[in-house]
Length: 169
Image 1 (tube, rainbow, N blue to C red):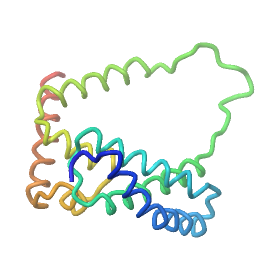
Image 2: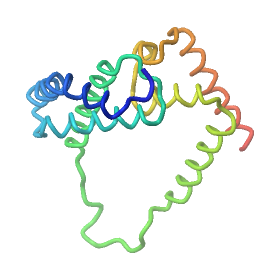
Image 3: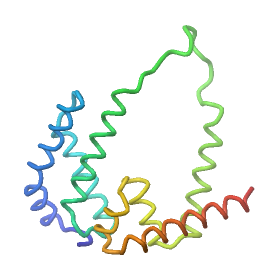
Image 4: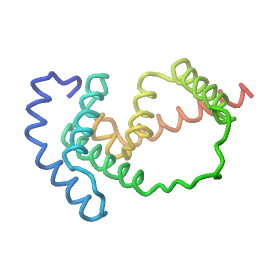
């Protein structure tokens, strides 16, 4: 399945919403997370819709929705357990961290390499692996490509990016 229509997405959402909600509720109980399961499910469904609309190939939308829901549960758990401690009692002058400009430049460089040096297929696989957190098996299921082919394409994409970064200094 590639891009879903609104009707297909609505039908799928009605079909799997109960399963996703039960999954989020189980995770919340097991982890002690105080989050609304419906909010987690809504975020997961939005992410699924956005993937579909961006043209990412989706073979098994239900499996992908379950994986996205799990990832949202874990993200919420991690965010809840981050502890912030004040640096000092005095306010710190200035607005940006010293590394902000450097980090923004690095991100621009990486984006440029992604779009100039990698194929659309490689970019999609990197997105599914790094941004969506899918395993190789899940990517294979979503894209319909053999696991070995995905592993090779990801390795090649990473090597291309690393080589380009090295030549840039």
